Image (cartoon, rainbow, N blue to C red; front, side, top):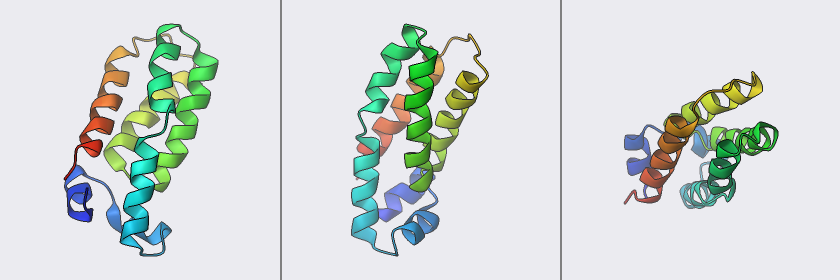
Length: 111
């Protein structure tokens, strides 16, 4: 994973680096920690079980982490899920969750 590959993914790298005091290695380390957050995997079963209260807590926490890292495409997907859960929408979360995991995995596989 590099700054350039994160930029190609659509991350606002300049903003993320600013939050990390311009330290590239530190920013990349934080991105790796952020996308490794266990709440990504915990969210799927919670959505399937329609445990929307706990799902909201998980995705809202992820929204803060991913937002601070300025991983814009991933953040937008997390925001959609968060707002549906906030509104207590009983929708099919499967496609949104699948997109979330696809984007997360795309970041994990950046070279």
